[in-house]
Amino acid sequence: MILSRKSIQGRIFTLLLILQAALVVTGGAVRLTGSGLGCPTWPECTPGSYTPVPKQAEGQLHAWIEFGNRLLTFLLLLVALIALVIAVRVSKSVANKSAIRSLALGQVLGIFGQGILGGITVLTDLNPIPVAAHLLLSMLLISGAASLRFAIVGIQTQKSDTIQTTLIRAQVFVTAGVLILGTIVTGSGPHAGDEKTKRFSFDPQTVSVLHADFVIILSVITIIVWLLTKNLKGVIYRRNNILLLIIFLQGIIGYVQYFTGLPELLVGFHLLGSTLTWIAVWSLFKSVNIKLIGGGSK
Image (cartoon, rainbow, N blue to C red; front, side, top):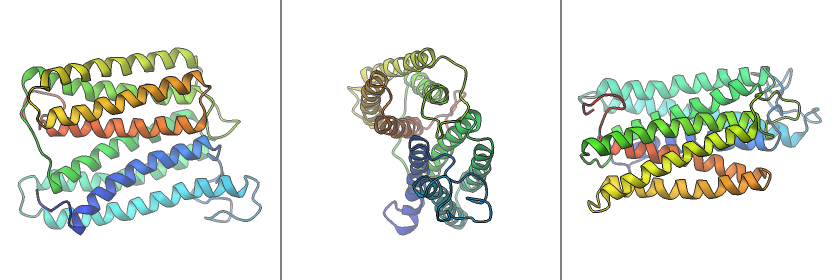
């Protein structure tokens, strides 16, 4: 631990993680309200103006929902820049200085990448490929923000045996598969962000079933980890319990939304749950202090 998590500087890194997660949720709100082209151009909102203008064709509500998401990106960039300055200053004499500074710089560069992807998304009329890339980059930035926070304010860790290590690594990779398949389901479904947007040519039911199969695999792995650690009552057990609860709630929401015609509100909660699932999986992974690939410790 370099900074106390309750200090003002320490809380900057918590805020960075929260804002990275919030950007996923607000981006989902843009899509679910049909506001993906509320600002029909980029970097301007509408030709000749960086902000919504009265009586623009897309409507004020759609325009301000999309513009609000853009504003959040600027706030996120500001917080990331502050975090970078703090990280550089406080890491001068620590052994993992390079890793901390790389994580902090990665946040800033990643946000610029998000801006470019966002522009491509708008200029291609919400093509599902850049839309999916937009979400997946957000998930990478969330894991980066979480890792940076843990490096600065600390995280409780616990040794794991070979079986637990293998299973926890598998949780990360399977969850990544769940997220990737989720973007394909979304790109094949009805909530595109605009009525005229191009969709993937996959059968929505088929990719939804495949997505659910990966969730089942993740659930089974997580239950096995619970069985292996329930008598130890350590940090792995506690974090795995959190993950198990989130997966259970996600499963309920997923099946309800599937059989009720994908109502926007439930889809929004499912997107939030996906973000929380990734944070929970990554936090569990970091708590065992292992490499994602390989057998050595970090």
